[in-house]
Length: 160
Image (cartoon, rainbow, N blue to C red; front, side):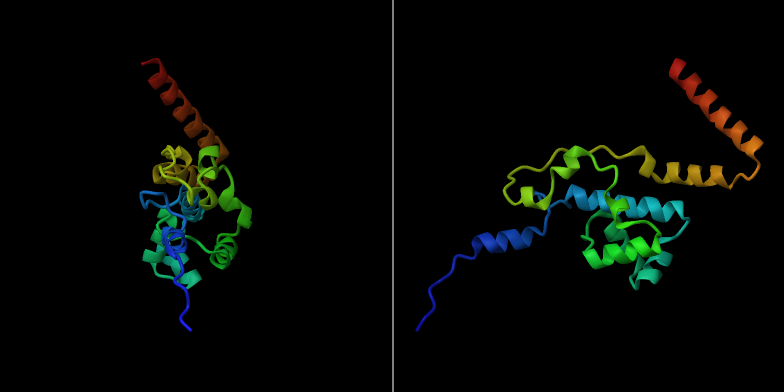
């Protein structure tokens, strides 16, 4: 006896989206989690190659995770938390409300992309490298002078 034809359009479109936005861009939550991976890796002074080696991945796979292009599964997130020495919850901290609203359960019904979320200054490479360099200054007096200099320069910019 022949099986009745099943309407698989809904299931296929849901599966094909893989949590992405309607336009196909990575989900903002995946981008946020990837950014937190990059932030922690950079703060530790670890290269993408070293992180990849510790996880059994190529640096290209690490790059895709950090951009949110590839979603990070639960077991991989667990491994990342161990290698980067943070709790799993770290990857979800400081998530904007707009990003939380882009959860895949809401994106299934979405017809428009969620609003763009502005890049966080604290996750930019220059900021991370500056913070790492600052904390490598062992002399507290010198570190205080660098801090005072940065504050003075930013105050001068604010006045201009």
